[in-house]
Image (cartoon, rainbow, N blue to C red):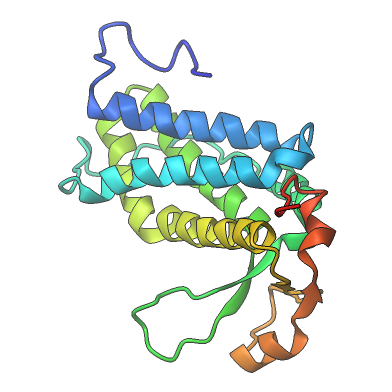
Amino acid sequence: MSDPTLHAITQNPDDFAVQIADSIESFIVATTEVAKGDEPDSAVPFLLLEISQLLLAGGRLGAHEDIVPDERYETDTGPEPDMDDLRERFAVLLEPVDVFSEVFDPYEPRKAPVPARISDNLADIVADLRHGLAHYRAGRTSEALWWWQFSYFSNWGPTASATLRALQSLVAHVRLDQPLAALDGLDTDEDLTEDDLAEEAGRVMAEEIGGPLGMHGRP
């Protein structure tokens, strides 16, 4: 579902900027629809697919040479959109499995996992992408690409990668009929160590979450 005003009619659909913008807008539209909760049974598999497709666009941005905007200073895009509603909708939709364990930098030794939330991550990703989309829709293509590339490295890329890993792990636990170690009741604002996570993690059977989230193991 693409905004008919997103691209000028003279733009080539094969252009790098057009393809990246289309991928990003598609992700925003799709995840916003999932957050409405109309099809909760397919939410997790659908998010797995959408995050995977978004990271393909991110990989293309990451492999691209450094993008330099036309202007020295970033043009103001206006007030940032409020992400609270999206965040809260996902928190309700994913409540049984919203909290997961994340390692921020796999190359930084002896860093303990910390609890994170899929709902927070999705809202943060959409906020970053919308910021660049505002530049793109205003005709500032180089500014949009610069922002999407910069924030891919600094924020939404790592956040999306962590979220994909959590979603993939969730699907794998259910499809392989394995018990799922869930962070039951953990507060993501706490500074918890790896031992804390292990001690406080609850045991939630796959069948308890598989039905509500639309995933089933082999009969």
